Image 1 (spheres, each protein chain N blue to C red):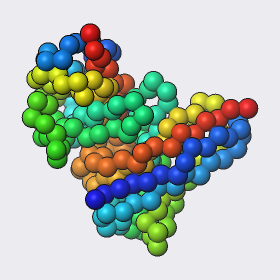
Image 2: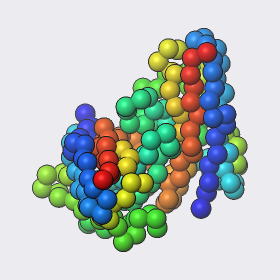
Image 3: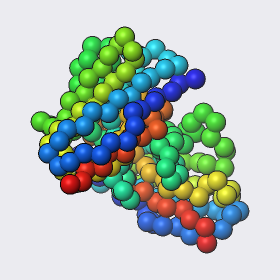
Image 4: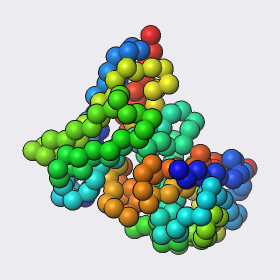
Length: 108
Length: 118
């Protein structure tokens, strides 16, 4: 079973700054099946990135994904007030469709 | 537009069962698998299992085998999650989410809070 770890646990930044979030897999995975989700309090996760680097419908281009093998990155180029949230990575190739523990991006 | 609408919050005693529903609309119900994912307070999401609305076949995460049942009603485009022998650790928000093979979870229900407390 693939285990995903995310770092840092919390990222404290100001609006307008760049955010770099990391997701590491316990073994090499296909980048075709790596996704990132955003979750705000009281809401369901929202798909941001799939296939490691493709933006989902309606996602602004300040969000970008990259990586391969065991190391993946979500970058938010300039944080907007609505971007302060928790971000999860997920490997969705086959069950058990593991999620990472999340990175919280909060306001500094 | 695609919508997944779940049933309301539940409070259950330890040992009881709970059944949560998820009604789909805005797409062809049988063309997407439906998954159930739960999220305990402050934790990452945890996958519970999948149901294929077309034939009703299911597959469950090993952790929940023997306690979980997923069913569907194609006449109402609704899927159901039933979890039995509830314990306090089952307190979580339960989500349905649709997915096709080799694609991510693209639409999620709003979530149903299940609280297990004596």
